[in-house]
Image 1: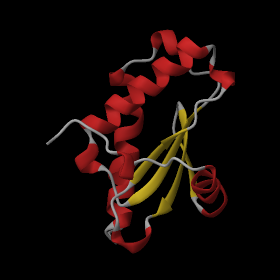
Image 2 (image 1 turned 90 degrees about the vertical axis):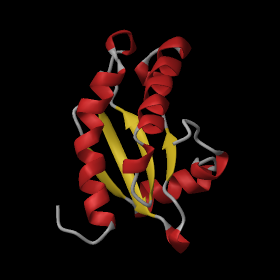
Image 3 (image 1 turned 90 degrees about the horizontal axis):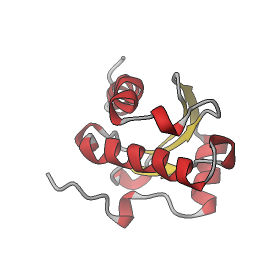
Image 4 (image 1 turned 135 degrees about the vertical axis):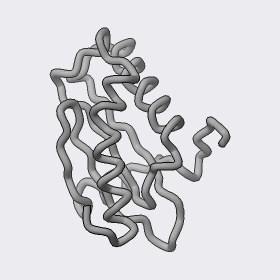
Length: 122
């Protein structure tokens, strides 16, 4: 397993984010709001991160994104065939945020999404 996240697996355009927000399903975890939209044409799932200024200064936002990218790289095999946009809640503090917090918060969600994308009931 390569620990890379190629460009074709990223959501990059504003219209793609807007589609996830408007047509997708919103799910809440302790630290994140996660928008999901089933991927079309059988392609692999794609990831988008939307970390706003409400989460802190540039260094804080970059830390949150860095930890989230690491989480998704390490767990890319559990990634369902959906477009996923992850938005942190504004009370998430970057200085205490680590990979284990992301795993505890997002792994159960990924497991339930993977079950739903294959047609199983979670």
